[in-house]
Length: 115
Length: 110
Image (spheres, rainbow over the protein chains, first blue to last red):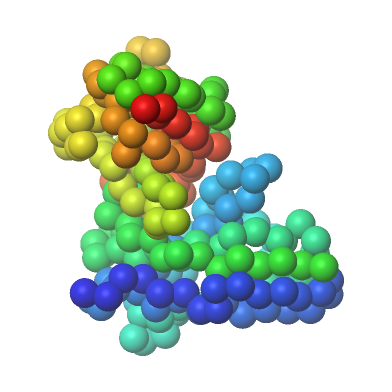
């Protein structure tokens, strides 16, 4: 099976703009999670979607949002970008309905740079 | 609040030496603990989880609830073990908010 894919791989934006990142899970996986990875904060959980519903949410401001489509593909959106949003955004998919950290398969990430 | 602490940012050893990557956690309920690994230019991937009590690539990790630790150990390090290692915690069962440590970079010298 093809792995988790994320597009684009690299992105440069300026402050105030918004951005949309895309994630295609492994075929058959219905749970998709998003993470932000930065040198200062490490890997932080953003949210998890299952069957088009947000099931869990981390401690991030409302500028960070997401959605999941009927084919399990997911997008995350960040509005009004700030310099601190520069990070590697990772997507992970899971085959289990419950999700669970252990069964997650990670994508390569999208490197977002905010200028 | 749940927290995962990996006190060492960098661990440098020689091939054949024992390795121990430390992980301490803070959580009030029943945790699930995991180790993830990221090799150079590869994706983050699960190495092992405490529930499975398995040994992967020679690595083992024992959950010590008394000391709230989940240290990763290998008796004889290999050069191919060089990677970034992340300890992670989530609540056992049901919904979860996974928490990752900051990671430890392991370098194994020839």
